[in-house]
Image (cartoon, rainbow, N blue to C red; front, side, top):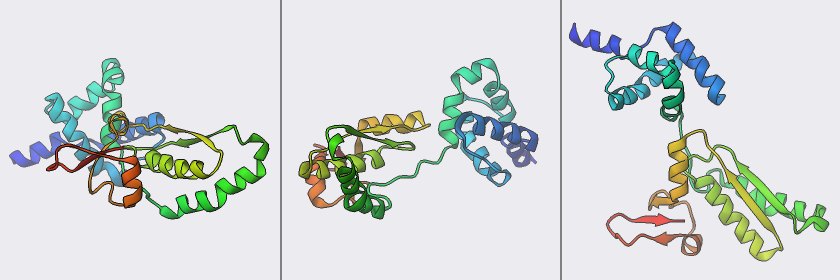
Length: 198
C-alpha cells in the first residue's frame, strides 16, 4: 500500500499533464503527447528531489505560481528536453556542404566573397554540432577566401553551459579524424580522465 501511495504522489493527473504539456509547447515549441506522460513524470522527479518536494502536485503548484514561472520554468524545460548530438553526426550533410553548397555559393556570389556567411545551429545541445561546423568551415576557408560566423543556440541553459566549456571525453570526440583532433583539440593534463577541449 505504501508503494502505491508513493507512486501516486510522484505521478500527475492527465488534466495536469495536459496543462504542463501545453506550457511546454507554448514556451519551447516542443509537443509532448499523452504517451510521453511517464517519461515527463520520471524526469521531473529529479527536480522534486532537488527541491525537497514530496509530491508532483506540490511541484506543479510551485511551477505554475508567479515565483515558479520566474525561477523554475527554465529548470523544468532543461529536465524535459532531450539533448542528443555527436561530432560529425549525419556526415553526409557536411560532405554536401563542402562539395556542393559552399562551392556553389562562392561561384554564384563571387562579388560578395568578403561577406560573412552566418550559420545558425539552432538546437546545438552540448556543442558538438557547431564545433563540427567550425572545423568543416575553417578547413574550407583555408583553401578559399571565405569568412563565416556560427550562432549556436539551445533551449537548455545547462547544455549551453556545456557547449561554452567545450570540454569532451575521449569517446565523444571519437568521430573526429585524428588529423582534425590534432588541429582543433587540446588534450587535458589529467591522463586518467582523457578529456579534450576544442
